[in-house]
View 1 (cartoon, one colour):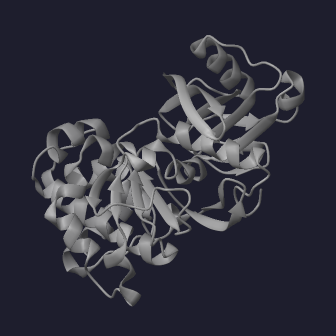
View 2 (cartoon, rainbow, N blue to C red; view 1 turned 90 degrees about the vertical axis):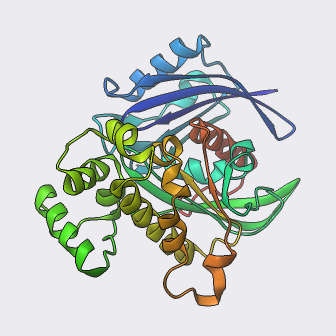
View 3 (cartoon, rainbow, N blue to C red; view 1 turned 90 degrees about the horizontal axis):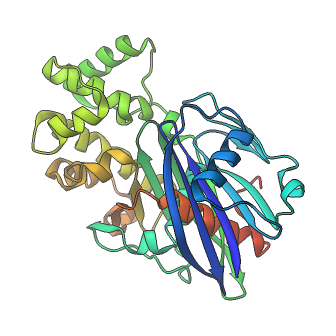
Amino acid sequence: MQRIFAADIGGTNARFALFTEHEGILALTVAVWEKSADLRTARDVLQLMQRQLQTPLAAGDTLVIALAGPTQGLQGKLTNGPLRVDLSGVGQQYGLSCCLLLNDFTAQAFATITLVGANAWPVRGRGSTDAESSQTKAILGAGTGLGAASLVCCGAAKGGNRWLAVPSEAGHAPFAFAGAEEHAYQTFLARKLGCDCPSVENVLSGQGLSVLHYYLTGQFFYPPAVGEQALSHDTPTTQWYARFLGRFCRQWILSTLSWGGLWIAGGIAAKNRLCVEHPAFLQELAAGVDMGGVVAATPVMLITDANSGLWGAARAALERQCGQGLTPDS
C-alpha cells in the first residue's frame, strides 16, 4: 500500500493530507488546514506538514505539493504570499518514490476524475466524472486569486486513460465587459487598482468582489464579509457577480471544448452557492454565439469539497508513478 503526502497551498490556507493508494484507488486518511502566511521555504512546508499530520516522511513515500503560483520542475513560488519552494534533493533526502511540485489548478484539473469530481453539485447536468471517458474536462475557480485549467485524454494506459493537465494564465487575461453600465464599472475598477485593463482575476477574485460591492453600495467589506452580507441572498452584488462568473465560464468552455464538463472550484462559489444558482449566471452562460452548441451541451458542476486540491494532487501523483503525462512541460 502506497502512502501519498499531499499539500495544497494557497494565499490564505495551507492544506495537508495523507492518502493511501491500493490498486489505483485513493483513500483519504487525514486532512488538516493551517494558515499559509508564515510559510517561507520548502523546509517550512515539510516541517509543518509532518507535524500537523503527525506522520514523518519515510522511504518509499510519495510527496506532491500543489502551489497557487507558477512552478517549473521542482521550483515554484506563491503568487499571493512570500513562499518560495525548491524541492531539489528532497526526494533523495527522504528516499521518496516520487516527489512532485504542481500549480494548484493542475491539481484541481485532476480532482475532476476523483471522488470530488463525482460528488460535485450539479449546476446544470452531470459531467463525465469517469476516468474511462476520454472527453476533455475543464475547471476554474475564484478565491484569493483565480485559476483555470483543463484535463485532456492523451491515450490509453493499463487500467484506464492517460491524462494531461493543461494549465493556463486565463485568470490574467483581460475581462470582457459589455455595455455602458459595465464599462462604467470597468473605469472605476481600473482606477481603484491602478491599471488600464482589469483582468478576470481582478473582477472575480476576493479583491474584485470587495470592489464590486463597494461600487454598488458604497460599503467596503473584506471578501468573507461580502459573502455573508451580499451573496447569501439576492442583491445587486449577487446579480453582477453571477453574471460576470457566468460569462467567464462560457468563455472557458469555448476555449477548452470541455465536452466532459466544467467544474467550478474556489471558496467564493463554494461558500455562496447563489453565485451559480442565480438566474443571471445561467442567462449569461447561455448568452452570445455558441459555436457547435458546445456551451449548451457542457454540464456545469460546483465543487463543494474544500479539499479538492488535495485529492487532485494525490491523483496527479498516481499519473506520474504510472509514467504518464501531467502537464505539457513536465
